[in-house]
Image 1 (cartoon, helix red, strand yellow):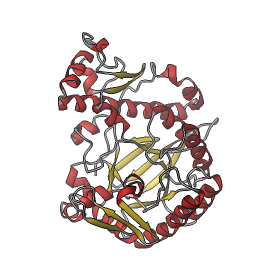
Image 2 (cartoon, rainbow, N blue to C red):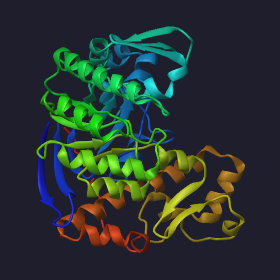
Image 3 (cartoon, helix red, strand yellow):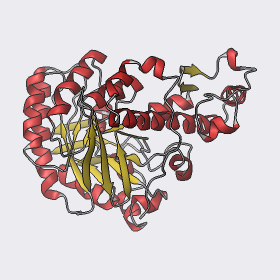
Image 4 (tube, helix red, strand yellow):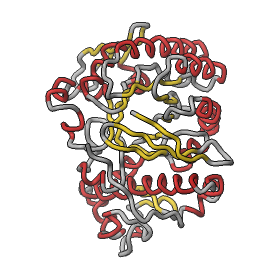
Length: 379
């Protein structure tokens, strides 16, 4: 992996970058759709690629549970297994330490899970988790970290910071693939001094990239933005910076202003399946009666496959009937929206007008436009 900064915004920490992987280039800032179990739900790889997506996210814990890393390894790796030619990032399972807290036990050596599939016990240590990700073969892998659920005491967060640092060092020692970049993760909750401590500990290990974890787990929007503002600009400027799991458009712009390069979030596709679509004019609910006889595209300024061929009336009909095609067509549109937003953001940064773009964003919903998008590079 090689990362280079191509342009910076004079009024913020925003930057345009180029992340080169063995499965193609990722232009940053970049939004990565989530394909937790080796699939973006309801979409083929070609449909995802047609939106301009260059990198996907998958989850090592979920792939370990099913189908198992040996199946993926024997298929030739995750890219071949899921027929995706672009870059892939795998989350380690640290978020499952948070989201499946009622089914796991954390100690200094690792995490024991009660499988959400069959109830069997699963043991993850930094070493075993890295072995799983080495077998899966994504372009970017994440260390095992502890993300304590809120509300958490200072003592709980401090313990998680120390475990995350120790586990990061163990992950780094266990990592074996030269064609896979391993990212460290900064934790610390909403405690500024603990974020400072975690940042110093993780940066000292000299990872090729860094992530900000432990956000959007119960804090207020103001606290999330404060943490990102404090941490992101202090991560090494020559390494990619990844904000984990935050994805509303205004949150993406706040992260970009702080110097973040990579984002992932499920909201684009989850909201699509629930009939909420993003447009230049704001979000719309496709089940609303207002769309019953509306034979115009979801967004006339969008060039996605859905907006080129289908109408609001038709999508409303599909959602009301519960047709699976509703989720597919809506997901295509929402992913295209996010990719267009990222492309417009990169253009604004390169032109030195990102802060203007961000300030005017509610109005810019109606105006940002990308004439063309590039599919992910192929080997």
